Length: 513
Figure 1 (cartoon, rainbow, N blue to C red):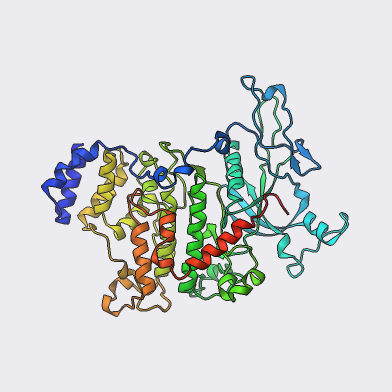
Figure 2: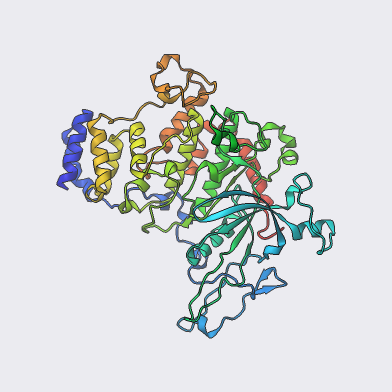
């Protein structure tokens, strides 16, 4: 308590805002709950532990085995051996997802690799044979010019991980598949030896399941990467945009796709689910939806939706009062509560809105990522350089957890206070000379006089929205539902919500191929 008081006094001396009322208020702050960042139960009351327990229960059921199928496709709710009994009760198999074989798919290309999975594009060969009446003995053509986009799927090959995390992801995907702009699960491939036991009567996982997901047919939600200079590694790498134009996203596109992202998160949060890894690579957009006439978009666009929020591997159900792991999200898109240490593990849906704010900052200032830290501590430092320390210390004081901050985090905060990083920097300092292209490698926009910058309505509204999203205190951060009705989206809201309503009326059935 003494240490926190000294920090706040010191901080307010630097910021010239020290007052008797503020100092007298410190003891009151110290008595508040440590759940500073938590307000999700107020924002989405129906998404917080009010559903039937089976909705959230992924611990008490098992993944379907290859012997629990009918004709190799559907899961049955069969009996289990005596060894599976626990306290005279059977585990429930409620993951009613179609089971497929690896022989049903032909790999086309590798899309990416992560810490927990490898992702491939593949042709659903069985579906292709059924559509074209091809004999099962004949090989399905797999050249790029002959592939029907409707038969393409994404195979997420999981790496070794605890089985309960796999069950959690599959259950969350089942819920998310009913929502607009969310990844759809079509099937799951269970290897024959996944449940095989060794001589000690313990499970030995030799290979991991593969999730079969609907293809997003999109590019990352960011400005296209341009090849600069003579860097050979850059020349040999593919640009982010493959099917769309290599031009920067327009102001209309930024509004349009960002609103679709907020709609996806609003539906997900309403279902009691935190994504916990919102970043451009997990948001796929199909630019054909904005490059053609409205009446032709559904015909010409490759994807059934203009935006798809993917990769729910880190997603989890939100239960009020639960401490969650702070080792989630990608570094450049981690919210402050994830960077302040494990004692700030009481967070909620607000961490996803920080990711949305980071994406908006990327697009507004054409600096991707906007917060670029070398490690978690340095990442917090880059945020402080923009947002200052005034609001940060106020947020920490509300939780009364300053003494529990890691030593390196405390040192970082003190260093930035001594350097004068007290107040938030105006967003206008990060704008380029004009609305033309900005290369962050050779232009330091903070040195450009304000009067020389062209501040449009788009930028002013976008920066106002940033003020609502990029804030330290998660309880003060706007929810997805609040952000949907920000004036920034007035131009596109009717069109986006009309499309979402149409998509909800004609949802894709989980497991259809």
